[in-house]
Length: 343
Length: 265
Ligand SMILES: Nc1ncnc2c1ncn2[C@@H]1O[C@H](COP(=O)(O)OP(=O)(O)OP(=O)(O)O)[C@@H](O)[C@H]1O
Ligand SMILES: [Mg+2]
Image (cartoon, rainbow over all chains, first blue to last red):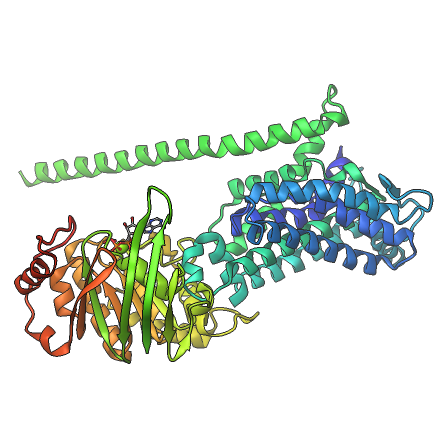
């Protein structure tokens, strides 16, 4: 139980990168981009293929991010230059990426052009390299020794993963927040808000949409590259329903933590990604659930996350009304008392 | 400054809906000219402004700004030196962004947008000062989302955003039409003040005859895609609504009709 939740938090931080990407398109740019299902695997496949081919995992990850960026730009080009509707542009790119991803992973084999999965069991990854350094510090032993001395039975194998992914996502979040406040960032936000307005202030909305989609899918591919290294495998089916998971994270986060400012919303999205993973892990522990039910559970979580806030909002509105009513009543009471006293 | 040469525009050419929106339009504005544009509904006033801004391109003809032919320049490039305020208060601002962020977007219209933070200390000072000149107390709400402002406040903000980079041309398309009379008057006064301050070359469409007479140094009247009357600086000073009406009747042989024309102020 504990280890399942701990693992969800680790993964949640990594998937949060993808969720930030989805937030950038769906919310900031107001562009429902479905490229994500494909570009996530592009990230995972590119990183895995390059690692297997002997490249340093850091280089493999950087190239994976660039590949995601390109994929997003292609979707942007389809929409802005090809005048194809946003949803369709994303779907077209997603389906095209399926074949492209097979070919990318196929670079690792000689006797065929495509390959549906790459195991990384015995390969160096960013995580394995990090562990060999982290393990030498002996921090896990001291923390866990301390915890067991307190009588806590379930301790994780390592604290290193959660720490490093948390640091990574915090850095990315800070850069993300900063970017959305720069002149270019402001223009991207305005593009999602009011295209007519931003065009009248000399911004090329086509370029901004392409750039936004590129950056979003770069984040998604980054997330995919890390997941492949974390789970030690890349698979062509990894991306199925990824967009829904991203949306789930955004919606859950926004519903719980609000959207008052950008800084707060990006934090909410990251928290949403982690909460989603935990809920999913808990749901899968129910006896009758099978790992194959994961997508169904995802859909149910998103549906709940969409409906529940409406319900809460209604209740909040009602309690506000009751409060205001009570306030008015008490004021009236005080007034009538005062006039009685005067009389 | 601005030269509109022989502009033609036909919508839906060759179909049953064919509409000649602009028919051989010629108009020259000198630096500092403030031309008010009146005319019945569908006369082609908005279309003419859209030709200048680049939102639409003419079938034939040429647009020159500052001596450069801009006919083929896309809208977003032209808007470096063209300020615009639209009729709909929603159109000119980004509602989910704050007042200062909106101002920052307007501020970088004539510069290359970079990875510099949009609202830094120095700019904030400048935004504060500019907002103070509106006397709407917006300077105390720099971090309020623009979506929360009233229509009049938004239009005032749009006007400021359109003008504070001193554009070569300012285009106003019925920018007070969606406001109640007192707000409209506020924006009208503000327009006069801001245009005068930087001596901006301005083209303003209005359905309010009095406004058209009060503001600007020249006036044109459009009908059915043509400029049917041009009033120059000297004559405009003694012009009245009655005279304008008579003039229209004389030229067109029919009564001036416009369901939105405000004959009184
Ligand atoms: N995009 C378009 N497609 C087809 N017809 C158009 C288009 N834009 C304008 N028109 C037509 O061109 C003519 C001129 O329109 P325009 O908007 O310039 O008039 P206007 O003088 O601004 O009128 P109003 O006072 O009502 O705003 C109208 O008959 C209009 O129906
Ligand atoms: Mg019009």
